[in-house]
Length: 561
Image 1 (tube, rainbow, N blue to C red):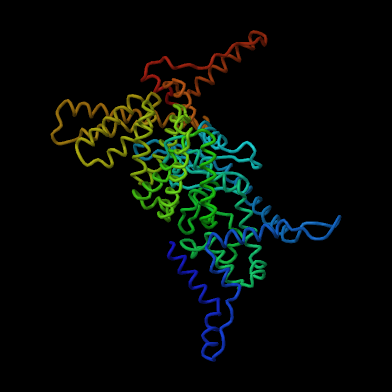
Image 2 (cartoon, rainbow, N blue to C red):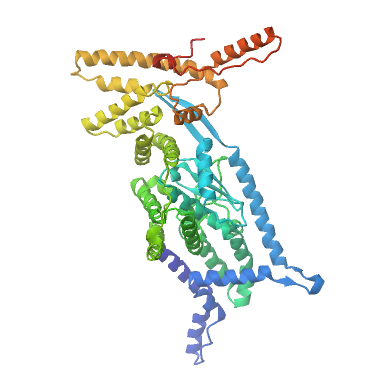
């Protein structure tokens, strides 16, 4: 990528700076070549020097007032910047509104599989709250901005930062992480772009380009092109950008930590429907500044900064295992290495401080691990349905190590093990997890375990006992499928996030309770009649409790209509 940028800049220099041609002509005529023009010094600047010089110039224009005394007022330049910045924030507010209304999940039945599909905003209140609390915990107390951090259901790792302070990350990105420090760093990096006013800065730079070229005596087209390359609209994303893009550099589907490694324009799959904005690519200077800021915030929050390099390693590993993942973020692996190296340098500086060895950093607590296991489970199922096999296996393996009694986790981990098995031992391991899924399936959520176990017994050399076992499993599968269909017909009146509520109950140690709408209705009607017959006196209505019923009964609480 570096060579591409250098080549592009070289072409620009040759095409827009006529000084060298004039020098040769003057030499042929026997005349002294003129002194280099001012634009040479502008275009020959390094990207960082050019950016900082332009930024200082733009901020000067922004802060400059016109008039004197009581008639002093903001300049037209400041009003233009503020107007575009407000327009961008209004646009981003509409984006947030769209995403906030996008939370949706539904139960899918595909052959023997029964699973919950998430789309848009991930509708798990506990996980959303944990994500937001983790992000808020690293924001400096004196920050002038307010932030909110939200999770989107999408297996592709990516993030989106809005100028309003809203930060979105996908389940695909969060599922790559293992500790609170890693998650905090990702969220802090995204928030740092808002903290440093990077959106407004890019608007200022674009609007100041013309005045900057005049001030420096440089070719305006050359300044615009170099600025375009600098702001991330060149290189991998240059071909994806069209006219007018410079006026909307703050918009993007993959930004911040992820956007800095984004490939060319990718249609956003984040909540709220299709989003046709081009992929945002923060420039190297903004990214490095956000990295340093995030590092400082995580350290100040007493989270272990030594875990941050694992973020970059996870990004690299995911891209190496599955090239489709690079559609979301890993467009430039060299930048991953560069940024990881810089973080390692920051860690080394801290480790050499006298008090570093005595510091006790906060570790990921069991509550964090359990909630993250739910993200890994749900993202693993999504990845499995997209045939993103490496991601699915990794996510579900980590979820199964924590959610040992969750039938959905156990079932889909068994599915990915069976689908990728190459040896009898691997198939036996898959069957072991199918068995565990069935044993923990008190709510009859993943009846397909019985079918897969039966199929494994359908072999030419099956013994009489194995054949009888397979017959029993197939009969159980048919019965369970039927009863689950009956339950689903009634679930239309149940909360759409019923499965999440069951997760909450399981976290509290209740694994067997199953909502029976007919029983609830009958009990309420009986209570109402008792109240009426007692002359309106208050009657204590005890909630339905079927937790002590035998396992098979608990799985079949819904009767045929």
